[in-house]
Amino acid sequence: MGRSFENRKHSIAKTAAQKSKLYSKYGKLLYVVARNGVPEPESNPALKNLIEKAKKEQVPAHVIEKAIEKAKGTGGEDFAEARYEGIGPGGCPVIVDCLTDNPNRTITEVRNCFVKGGGKLGNAGSVSHFFDHLAVLSFKGDDEDRVLEALLEADVNVDEVESNDGQLTAFVAPNDFFKAKKVLLETFPDIEFDVQEITFVSQASTALDGEDAAAFEKFLELLNDCEDVQNVHHNVEFPATGA
Image 1 (cartoon, helix red, strand yellow):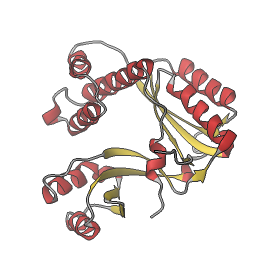
Image 2 (tube, rainbow, N blue to C red):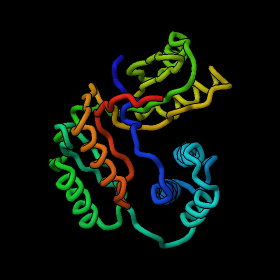
Image 3 (cartoon, rainbow, N blue to C red):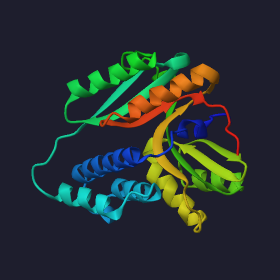
């Protein structure tokens, strides 16, 4: 317990520009996943899962279709994954995942975000030990024992199952992501996943408020404005906002 996974979901309100960034992010991700596998969702579980996530975040169908059609062609862009680690405002560990066709440009932009945000970019592995690399599947429910039993019977490597306010979250080994998802859908046919991804989950959270919280939000905005940044992982717990 106490992984504070939902804290990582904190994000600033979506403006038109941010929606454009979101569509661009998914367009690039879909292209790479389709290109690296096969551009057919039913034959590419990773692509099918990514399409489900894109739809949940209200990415338009034409953006999804365009990326997949692009992956079916010859040539095209050559994107590579890049991961950067460092310390953000308030001394909090941060991992930044990118897709880039120009590593020099990307690392320069990410470093500038750390500098402007009051943090410091570190070396590979400098903060990853503060996180666990896990597959996360979360949905509404309260039968924690049934979830754990179903996963263990299917020989899924389970790290933890949490039950919190009517929400069940299973943390499993990344390699067991699709197996775990299949088992849960078979066990609970009517569920709808609120979270289904392989990510970095912080081992403990750091509460920020006041100027520190504002500084970290500004830092996240700078990173979100970078075209190559796909995901930002951190351990910050922001103060609760009023209803």
